[in-house]
Length: 170
Image 1 (cartoon, rainbow, N blue to C red):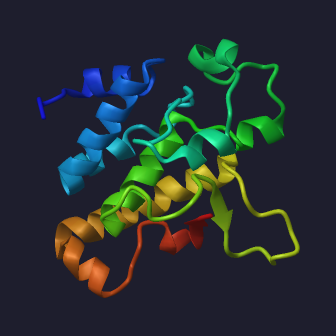
Image 2 (spheres, rainbow, N blue to C red):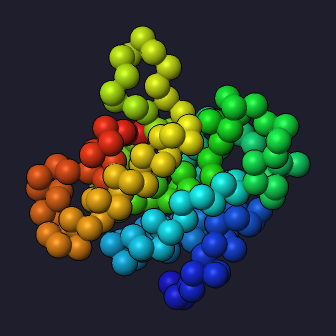
């Protein structure tokens, strides 16, 4: 695949062109741990990322975003619940960090964070800002360990990127 620079990758991820989005996602995934710094720097990018993630239709079905909202980031008219069901560039970034660890883009069925600290009878799923901030904090700690120990060592220890904050994907 042709090498993409950071500016191109961000433009592709925020594009309305499914092929460009999928190309960027596939490129970042295939680059593996080389992508970690770039992905971590996407924290705060709340632009929508409209993709079925290379054919995984469950992404499209679980978080439909009306076309008029797509290029606008988080419009004021979205409710908190709608925001939590949205797939943004920063959510895709966290997801890709996890996908690199698992070695698969479809390691889970949905791109929604879940707080494992909360009891099951409490609402604990969604792409809440708090979860995203905690996710990036955990991913940075994990990435540092990954640089020191290597990806395979972390896989052997079953230490996944969001573990230190007790988050997972559902």
